[in-house]
Amino acid sequence: MGKSEGHRKQTIKSAQKFHFFTHSPTDFLPDLRRLLDDNERNYPSVIETLFNKNDLQAQHFQRQLLEHWARMPAIDVQSSVPFEITTLRSKLRSSANINDIHFMINGLMVLMKLNGYEDINSASIIKLIIENLKTKEDPHSLIDSLELAVCLLETINAKSLDSIAVEVSNLLVHDDSLVRQKAKGLLKSLLTNESIVHKLSEDTKKRLLAMIPDNLDPRDGKKILKLSYLVHCLAPFMKDDEKYSLIQLLLTEAIPKIRSSAANEALRQLAPLIKNMDTSSELREDMLALLSERLKSRPSSNKKTAMELLIELYPDCEKTEKNGISKDILAELQDPNLQFYTNHLQMFGLLLTKMEESDKKSILTNSLNTLKQVERSNLAQACAALNVLIEIAKTEPHFSFPQEVLINIEYILQSPGNEKLKKSLISGLTYVMNHTTKEEKNSFAYALYNILSAKETLSPVDVDLLVLILSFSEMDLQDTIAQFMLVNFDSLNLDAREKALNGLSQFQNNPRLLKKISIEDILFIIEREEKQSIRNAAGKVLNYVLTCQDEDRVLEIMKKYVHALSDKKTDHSKILEIIKF
Image 1 (tube, rainbow, N blue to C red):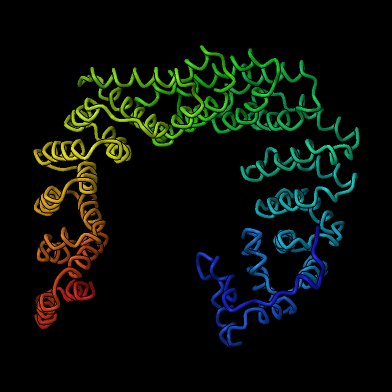
Image 2: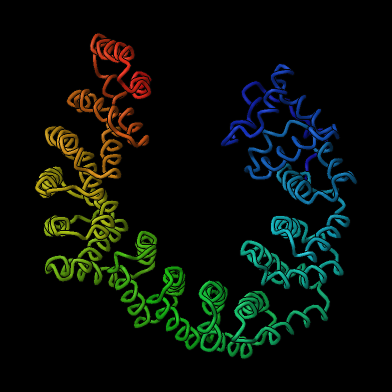
């Protein structure tokens, strides 16, 4: 399993020398960079020296380096750690570090990635873990302890396993959700691994099972949540009829009565059990009824959880149940005010991948019929149908959008208001355009521009649509749209102004379009706009526009603004900003 001590000694090639820094999203060790500069950037010897020292600065670097390496893929760790495994092993054995749980977990993670995990005496570390789990105080320290326990699970003796199992079960109701998640993960690992679970004493197993009736209190959300975790983890030790009765009781009597966050988490624990039980049809019926009810309720987290679990259960459902799930989810997509609308669309896309072709075709036909019959009274239904078509198209590479779909997109966009509906379409419209012919694209682009240009005022969503048309329209229309946005710039609200400028800056590699943009228009925006982000967006456009001009034209503009600095009445800060751009 491990490599020989001599084999781990590495010679870092020049190309690998700063491998560590290439994996850091930010330079979080500037002092180490300076240290490398002082030592002629000899990365291997500096790191080795750091790990052989015990002063406070060296310990600080050691912690940060280990934390960084612990999060890297194993293959990258092996080309980033330039010292022998024995150096790190001796650090982990050191009495000075044994009480530093963060140091220990990161160090052990790195050792495992270097295949040098053997020879570590885990007894003292396990003792530290058990003591730390008993405190139940610092969430970060608890999470580290739980993760470290998972790493050491195979090496823990029977007595310590008993202690850990009991302490971890008490953390299933910790206030920190990540602690609860890690505790459940550890308990599940402990109870589902045959080579580990046989070490548990019968008393401990009985003690864990005895916690089930102790927590069966429908009035106490914390106890019901803990109970759901216990059932999830202890299911292999429970009799089928006991498990069945308990889950049914939770679904019908307990979970509907507790607060949403605890109920959603409890349902997540029960779903995989219901899915895998042989006699689950009645339980699944209870679960589907509860999820369908929660899909229509608030808060939005109820809807999100319900949709995710409905899709998880979908493949094992009967035909009528599948139809019910599809119907419920499609109904939800008709609500543009949904907080998780995009998430719901993505989840519906996932549902499509689990559907039989006949079911998918049925939904496709119904959605097309809805679009053909669209009226002002059911725009939400039409918009949902269009979004459904887009999701279906993503699963069908050769799908072609019929002409009536494009016509009805125009209808939806032409209707007054409905900003949220329109916003929900924008991401999908790009996909629609990629599945239409060049002629259809141009026809749609001109039709959409005519709709938007006829409006008295443009909303931020309208500007988003104009920018979208820019990306796929022909050259003449691109010029027209760019000029239209600048001419109407004053009538836009602040959000729409910024969107318009950011849209124009996307065409930095289109000099033909940039040359048509008036430099004076952009300079005027920078001079008078108060909002810094709008000036920055305009400055970016100015920068791209100037790169398309000849040198004399750029110098002429620069001289004008340098000369303006001598005028005491002008705003020098704005002028300097323009010169900077």
